[in-house]
Image 1 (cartoon, rainbow, N blue to C red):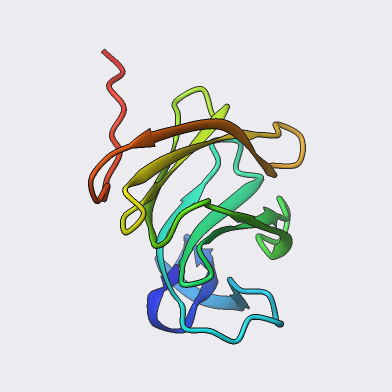
Image 2 (cartoon, one colour; image 1 turned 180 degrees about the vertical axis):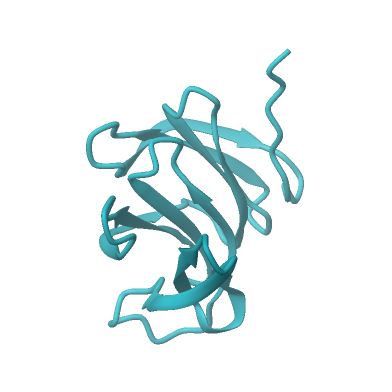
Length: 141
């Protein structure tokens, strides 16, 4: 769960027998050295289930976490600057090769290549100008 106001993510353990969730851990989406204001916006798990991404509005980055396949616990893999202010939304393309960050106050959508092994992001150099982008949808048909 993305905790927007305190810039954290909470993981939960699912109890299928009881149909309930129990908190497992709470992790920060920001580096410990960051001292500015921040809220989070979008959260997504890679289709592989091995990586979790969260957008930071203020730090202007995508936080990247490795997901332990056994425990579900998160380990920070770092932060990728979104190259614009206020990444309100991001989307992973259907083949899970690219991540598009919508910088709402920067009027841009910036494209990042996803490393398939580590889940880290690298800018492709493609920047799309768009007034206040707030959502990205892919058509599969």
